View (cartoon, rainbow, N blue to C red):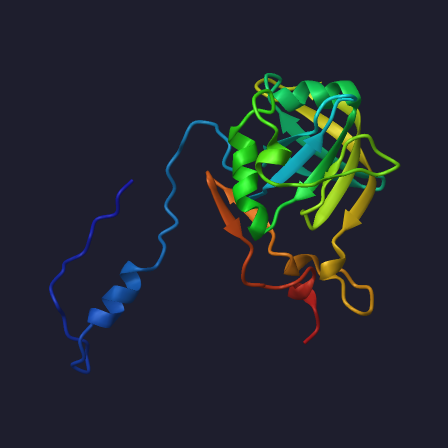
Length: 218
């Protein structure tokens, strides 16, 4: 619904000053009017992550996902959603393991590449000069260049429609020591994390507050 625009004539206030500035301020104020759309996915921004996986005896693979999230804190659990036709889908369903690798500014190009190329056709680690990092506790490799690696074991696969959701328990985490201070504190928000919103990548920026600041005593 469109609001009728008022007259563009320049008027004078009671003290003789122009209302041009007032009108400009009003015109730039959001109206918050709504328009109805059909159901769709507009829950943005989301974390852009690279998920690594590997079948025994085969080369490791990476799939880029934005539909990933935390679902439980105790035990620590996450979820990822993948289309069944994707190459990594079968690998993760068969092996029951994957690693969520967080993405920073330096990994954005590789992140996009790994989202549009298929592991059936290319070796993504090789093409993007990424390093698979293996551990004694997981078969799936992490990405060495990622600031945070979250090792996961699948507990349940739920078919939903276009995607299946993998529920997984976090079995371990590795972090880049470059972002730890002398006291051993890890500065996650200094790693340059990247978010995905409506088809575009953004680096996280200005800090607006912290958890609980709205009720913090001043």
